[in-house]
Image (cartoon, rainbow, N blue to C red; front, top):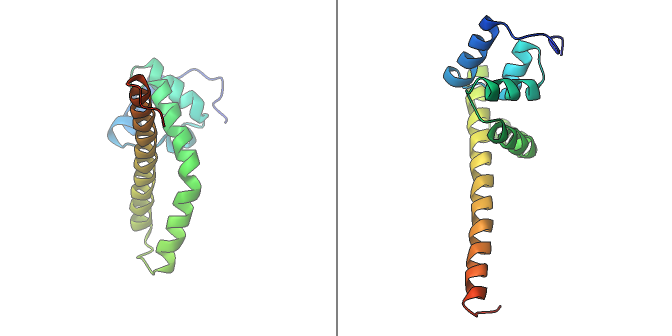
Length: 128
């Protein structure tokens, strides 16, 4: 990234806040625009109080895991002759990405619930 190591200007921080909070750009889009790494963007958002670094990092990780799923869904949609305008593809991709993240979150919640129920059953003397 060509801005790596450069100080953040006030205008750049204001732009960062607008892109993250108002435009709801993802970290990679913001990083490209600012010519900085996604990690630098996440650190700055945390430092300025716009977001929590740990939450952003988890979201980035989940998005990278769901990237292959998103590609598969996009291919299926294209093969079904979905309107291929840029705006439609962008909205579809964003929705697909959000659905994938939600599905992963639900899977994680299911796993946690199973573990909690299992522990509770063991504590009550039910084994198995």
